[in-house]
Image 1: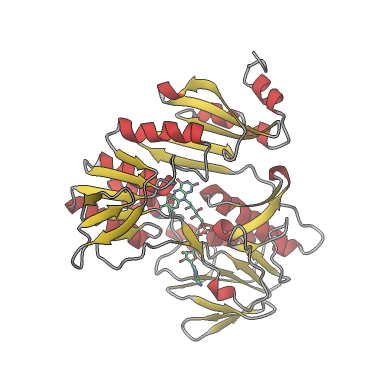
Image 2: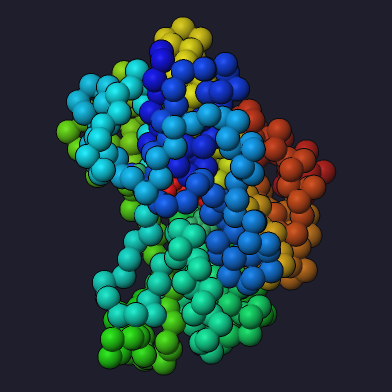
Length: 404
Ligand SMILES: Cc1cc2nc3c(=O)[nH]c(=O)nc-3n(C[C@H](O)[C@H](O)[C@H](O)COP(=O)(O)OP(=O)(O)OC[C@H]3O[C@@H](n4cnc5c(N)ncnc54)[C@H](O)[C@@H]3O)c2cc1C
């Protein structure tokens, strides 16, 4: 293998390039990124970049000497338009093509945009999006955040810390319905309310009004909120359009690219990693796909090594999923999964203290651990999720007698 093309210059793309070099690959690595920037870190975009509290370097993933030492053929501001059938060449938006002995797909996801072209209505996925939202936060007094997923929740917290009036609108009855059980979702709602956010649950945004710029947001309960700034956190769509006709199979249920246990796609020599890759995880009863920062790096590392290893030295990808979020100066951390769950138990602290560790169980097994302001305790339980652990064993590890 002499030429490897990585498409998508985010965390997963960069992680794959680093892993290839760390494994001793000294051929050509072409890294193609649609954005004009070198790979950067997205988590600060809804936190430090909006509050202005972090350094402007906070989004830089690798400093220049470290990045240059990878000796990549980096093409920024260029889109991959097509992966040719068989996966041995990628056609680019500048009219050129790159040939490849191996391809790593790392094109991630794009923010779902609300159906309006009024100015003042933003999404938050890229550095350019974050800079635009930051500028708007400096001039506006009220913001409507549509969608109380993690990104919406972080935008609400950042805007509050800058003193704006914040209205957080969520169609579901609790925030984060896809990610955490409602019993914990309710606690996270209270966090926003404690901090002065107006939270409207079970309410959808039905339209935007204004003359060129947004002036008002219409809601499904018949009311309207006057505002010049909206950030929509309505989830993402997968950047898979360029794979049409390539033979790379997509995952119709979870979205993204369908991989096997080794992160390989249905085209030999083509792997997929990061937000857009689904794969069968033996401890979660089927396929999963994770939109988590840590996963992007870990999956990229394993896939890169598997690509080099060929059929025989490959390892399956069986991580403990990990996600964190920072809101109102508090860290929320999740290991494993927290929804759906049959059983939820607060094993340390309590929701009232705004400091706790909760276990999530399903089918008699521990499936997730979530902590608020409890980093060392959460991390202590990681080992329980590296192997099958029954609910009773998990409670015992936390010093709780089952049924007591
Ligand atoms: C605002 C924000 C805050 C977040 N905060 C957290 C957090 O606190 N904790 C956490 O665990 N996770 C967080 N995440 C999620 C985390 O950032 C993602 O899981 C991670 O960025 C995924 O990396 P990726 O490389 O798979 O995809 P991406 O980061 O989406 O990178 C893909 C890159 O590919 C490019 N691309 C797409 N199509 C093409 C094409 N056809 N040709 C060339 N290039 C293309 C895109 O422009 C993009 O630059 C956050 C995400 C956002 C947006």
